[in-house]
Length: 97
Image (cartoon, rainbow, N blue to C red; front, side, top):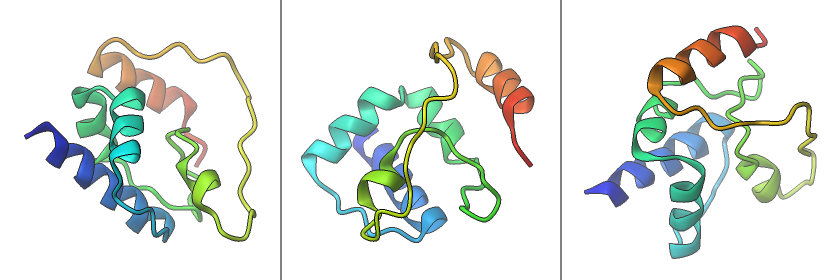
């Protein structure tokens, strides 16, 4: 079921950023807006960590940081990738480690 995919993504983000994002209907809707199923599958493969500075740019970490220590800053105009190949290509070009 598709919602299970987004639940896995929520857990992946929680684990990667040491967050406690609750499972809510609204969060599941946000994740579905931010990621189509193919992108969500790909995001599950990314090693998310604040130490490695790997970000998928979703803003959830900033939204749920209880210390307000994380902020989002627009660094470029973003046009969503249309294919998994395009996601991979962008990821290789833009990674920061």
